[in-house]
Image 1 (cartoon, one colour):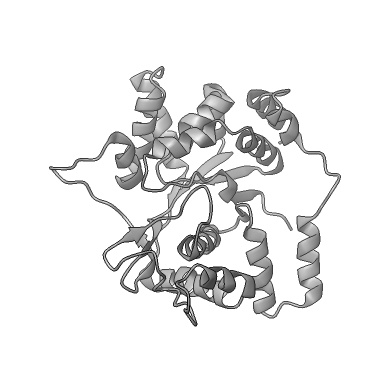
Image 2: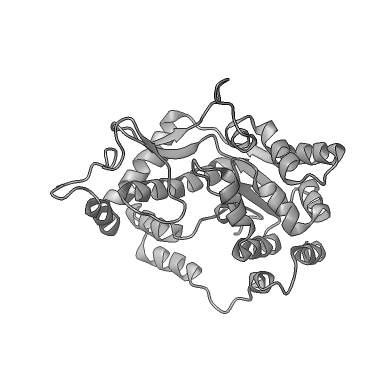
Length: 304
């Protein structure tokens, strides 16, 4: 039975150590992301979006219009999940790690860095103040209160992180010939067996985050697999919701089912769900600009 809620990783704006404004801008200008939002608004009562800096909030206002966005918050149709930390890969055998950054008096945060790494309650206000200057202070404060009310901050202990993210990601790679061969192919010539927590390209005193544009080497692959496992863990911690995985995650999920001992019939059924065809897709007309998100919201109101 389908849940009436979904934690949707395809609307998660992934951030690296570059200015978050860049990633948010790319997301904002993508017709595909706007189209996906439209489809999910018509499929689910409650759409939950993963976010660290709440940069998606001004984007949703731009796409939906202020009135529809406020209405979606007030009715609980939109919600947010804020993860505890971002993912990176640390040298000296540390491998997959969660990280936070603090500012100092000599190097204070920019406003957009404060939105990423500062307190949850500050992030929506910073985004609205700088990205939606047309809002009055009163309007902004009311929106911030609504956003925070509809946000669940997810925390996890080190034991859970090590089991569900670190160990699970290394297992996913080691037990998949294609993934393990990709990692080995990007290690120095003559490497017999790649140590996933000690891959080349990251010095003992260095730290890397996932490249947002492509998987370039073994470290990027490890981080991409870890990111998918983080999506799964956060949806599980959120509770009582479907999981909308990011592109490519379905391949990893099939491998997990097989490793867990799922019968081939169940895996075939899972595959058939991924390959459903001839289903009307409202997102196509939204992406083409033939119908707007405010119109989608009006349609949703008549449906629910």
